[in-house]
Length: 95
Image (spheres, rainbow, N blue to C red):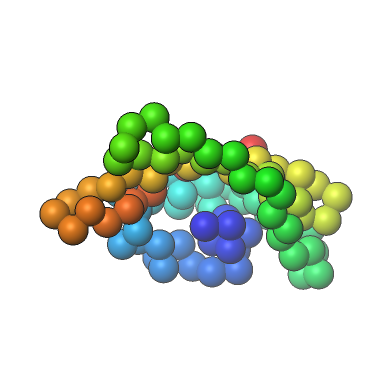
């Protein structure tokens, strides 16, 4: 997800791993440049991941993403969906 948000990968690669709403939120963040890199040498570094499970079929998590001197937070929700119980991202925010 961080690679998509920084523009290193196309958002379409996550389409089957996101709900329609989650994909829309992700695509909006990419268009807005929420995690733009300052330069090509700025590689994202992930900080600690914090998570909680509000129900057995859902996980909410956030992670700090460092890009050069800039620090961002990415929060997302994963839910088990469908007959196979596949995990999908249903919501994502970045600041």
